[in-house]
Image (cartoon, rainbow over all chains, first blue to last red; front, side, top):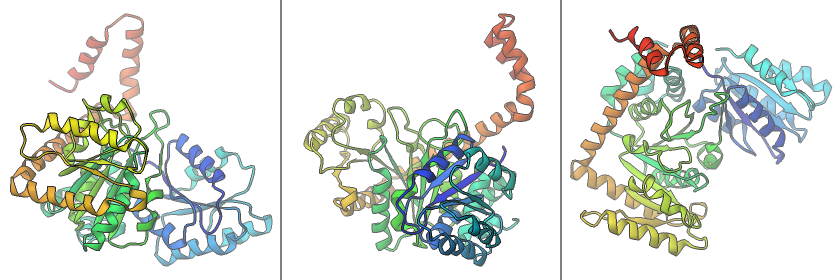
Length: 131
Length: 313
């Protein structure tokens, strides 16, 4: 049987708005993926621990508070520190244009702002997963 | 990946997680690793948690785990949610209620989709229990999907089965009688701060009076408010008591016998299904026959016989 893509969706930091994360989670489910939703107020440690236990192919981070340069990069750094190289990191939320290349440089491969069609995210994940 | 089983035996979380994935995907690597793990299993106490949607299964597990951890025991949690029959995808959300345990190294939480299995479990559930067991977990929780009446497969795998009920289900408790109300080792009336709890307990009690009239052990009924940590210490005591009892009476041995029977059947079923319904060839083999059935050229029974005749000689 083929490997089923598993995705962790998490909301780091202090941000209570998870409608977007839930919409994306649903779209990924409808695309045949297994989506683990961890809820709000996650630390980088919690996210990585969950990603390890759930053995996901993708971590999807959502943040609308503006702290993405700190919180997303924390997750990316911890991933590298743990030597996990077969998980891709994608993110969404209110992210200014000028931050996109910076995030990509930090190892966040997919950055999806408001208005991104869900199919774009599905396609990106299917194309970029590492196993 | 060669030594994944030895890493699992050492309790390496990444090896445990990867082996579960391989088992879920029916990867041959998993088969070989599982063979090596079996001699190291049998020590863990497997606790099944079942009940209707929203009865508080995940929250209760989180609380029970906290207490077992205080008793110095390590815990593996296997939380099952339904896979969509349409897309094959799944939204696995039980972890949300277990966030308190997220950073505890003595706890391993894994979410599984049912992937087409009925009965309230996932196909890889036997493998995951063996993997957790071999990795040294003392307690293993198996949380079923939110069940209706007939999803009772959890008793095949659990040493101790908890059926979670909540007040306010009214008459529906009557309908549950035939299905999941027959499988409990312990009844838990959760959300016991709600209106109607006395009636619910009385209804369950009358059921126990009938079903256990000729038994020495009357299935206990406990009340909890998991969210407020009420009644959970008593529940852990009752779980431990049940474990001691089944060890003493040899019931545990019978239970394990049943589990291995179910596991064996599941492995054979999976192999046969993969063989018959091999995705790459299934459509071309079967599609023409379905068309013939539609056109009344052949009946479903003869078509099935034709397919099977190629396998069973």
